[in-house]
Length: 388
Ligand code: FES
Ligand SMILES: [Fe+2]
Image 1 (spheres, rainbow, N blue to C red):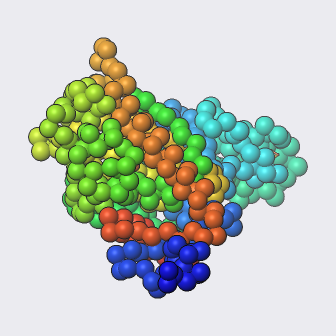
Image 2 (cartoon, rainbow, N blue to C red):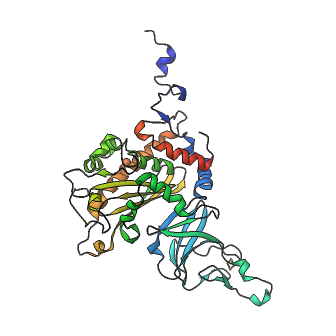
Image 3 (tube, rainbow, N blue to C red):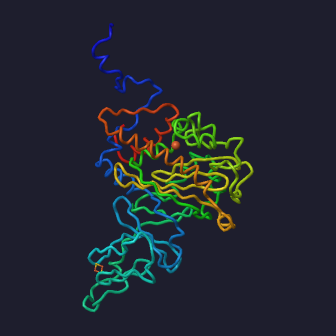
């Protein structure tokens, strides 16, 4: 009685102008689902940023290489005779054959193209080619491999295909300071000295931005993460560590000795930590697509590789101190389980969102506990020129 036909047929309306001030709009659905936007993200974000491509301990010996796709470009890094890591486009300067086809391996003492045997030194110089005497005017220095900037940081290899990009430190340090306050906090964990105790790769049917956003907010924690909130009770409040403000770390539940599924202590404290670090959990986002979790006896490193608008491959490493991994009876399973369960809960939620975001009626909103995601949107719009 009294309700118009229009009201009855439209139980909820969503023009942005009618939203209460506490609800802020998400990006439009097409920013997550459209192949064209995915291509824009690749060009505007991933082709212009430093991107983690893998572990530095995969490229320790002379001639060892690691190959990756960065924003659609095939690149590799290789360990030189001088011990330095260098990055190159995976492209022979003769007629364009790729120089490596495996994701990793070794070139040996030189990089020899398998097509016509043009051969490059490990620092990318053209050294020799068959029938060189036929080409007395060939200037070798003009035909070396095309370089890509590469750095090692936190035990990982980072590259950028943008020759004009700011240094890696300039990309990462402001983010660390905004998250942790004191960047020395990260240093105490000695991440460069840790080694991989376990790795899981997750193929997620969701956009890379949804996965970053999910990592930033804890509004979902009470609903989907019973194991995580049992270990970290404050997460049930909707505020995690990323959304909790500068320097915020979450404290383990009183009945927990460590961040494990059982709650039992599993490993010794990382050697650089203070007593005050002992029961803390920190989440850190390193845009565009790396995330770190710090707990007192291990570190988790996430890399979210964008594969397509609706496909992100997330590689998660559980990192431990070398002495701990070498200790007889080392078993990472209890530490792995709590976060593997949590990851699967998160990624299933991201997949459900991705399915819904295809709807022309999608108009997502962020509640106050999620407003931290607006910082991510500001960065994203600045990188891509996407409309606010
Ligand atoms: S394409 Fe590499 S040597 Fe010809
Ligand atoms: Fe989560």
